[in-house]
Length: 113
Length: 114
Image 1 (cartoon, rainbow over the protein chains, first blue to last red):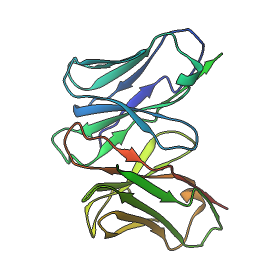
Image 2 (tube, chains in turn yellow, green; image 1 turned 120 degrees about the vertical axis):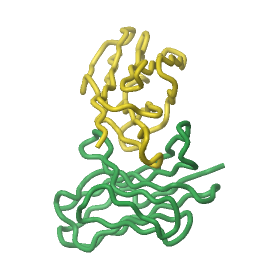
Image 3 (cartoon, rainbow over the protein chains, first blue to last red; image 1 turned 180 degrees about the horizontal axis):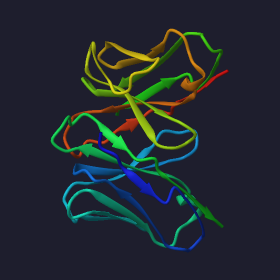
Image 4 (cartoon, rainbow over the protein chains, first blue to last red; image 1 turned 60 degrees about the vertical axis):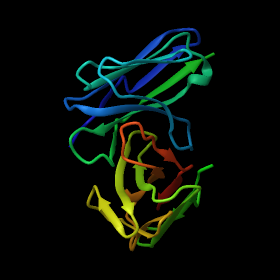
């Protein structure tokens, strides 16, 4: 079973601060996806990273895939209250079934105004 | 455009009662379908996935079962609910199996077993 460990589990910051959350595994993934989920709703995809070392930017969000494709990070610059939510990383199995995405337990981010 | 419908949104059931949650997808054909469970607003646990009609793969042995009677219909069932079955159940679909394919989630069913 491939496991994804996300850290920190909880993060509470003030508006305007920067933050980084992490997604780590001992396994290699074909690709890794980041989702954001708001209470009572399903997760919504933010980005997919495929190549080791890849960096993608989505406005104030920067996603990086580790060189060995075992880990990833999400950096948010100048956080806003609208960034509040549960951030989930999900890895696509490498070398096995391509039908399953394995999710981490998430980082619950609260941005206070 | 593709849409995914999941119902009901909330459900309160007594222990020992049966369960049937339904999920349908519109605007696509032959999708890969998934049932996830999320406890206490945390990570998603994959319960079942299906790559075609009548094809069900179970990830975690438990008190639940799944069926896919039609291409775009996925049903999660239980004959007798347990307290531990409480949680937020999410249905999702994915068009293919390539590395860039993303999951589209339904709005979820909050199940409380009392």
